[in-house]
Every structure is written in C-alpha cells, then in structure tokens.
Image 1 (cartoon, one colour):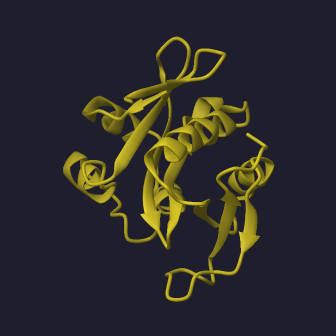
Image 2 (tube, rainbow, N blue to C red):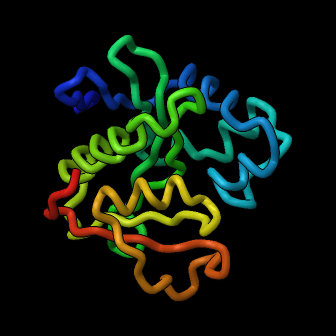
Length: 168
C-alpha cells in the first residue's frame, strides 16, 4: 500500500524527490543535520549529497502530509537488529510541538506492521534531543540496553516497544 491515512486526514506516503528536496530546507546548520541524521551525514550538503546520504532510494522512505497535503514530516523504516527500526524521523519546524511527531510515528507503525514480520519497533535518539525523546516515550517506547557494536553509544539512547502494544 502506498498511502496510510489517519482519522483527521493526515497521510503517510512513499516519499518522492520533491519531498526530499523539501526536507533539505529544515536543516540550517551542521548541528541540526547531525541531530537528525548522525555525524556521518555531510554538511554543508548539496542536493546530490543530501539525496545520497539519506538513502531514500535504498530503504522504505515516507513523507507525512498534512490534511491540506503540505509536507509535514519524514521517516524511514528498515530491519535492524531484528526489529522494525525507525530512522531519520523529522517534523517540519513550523509545526513541531503540535502532535505531528506522534502522527508520524503512529502512521509509520501502521506501515511497519504490514511490511515486516517482527515483534518490536526500535529507534535511536541523541540524548540531548529531549523533545523527540519525550515524543517517543509518549508513544510507548522505552529506553533499552544499547545494542553491542552500534555506533554512538555514549551520545544516544536506544528505544524499543512491542509491535502489538497500545499507546499510539
């Protein structure tokens, strides 16, 4: 399925090139870029390096659209450590703190349930990214032991939640 929609008209669609171009404008500096995508994501970026570094053609990549079809968020899903990992999650700067992050995660979980036959969702978040951490915890994610060998253990938390649990 290429689109998931919630009861309020927000939708999650397979990201297209214009969506990737749109999220490029959400990262004005190296700190914002690294907080979103990690330190290996190049900054300053060009359109080419941004498209290349976000791996959008190599993994399941989605755009959150508001009821008026405006680009509102972005996220990716893939199997990591036998869990449905959510990666590069971001909400448009002008609507942060208004529930769009929870909508993004909820819709990504719907896609994940239909796409993967795994028992848990997972994600990584920088420890200093308190708003994101609070959003994830509100969605039922809990901090877990950091996976052995995963990079950035001293800078990030690793969170998981069961696929079947409530809270979304």
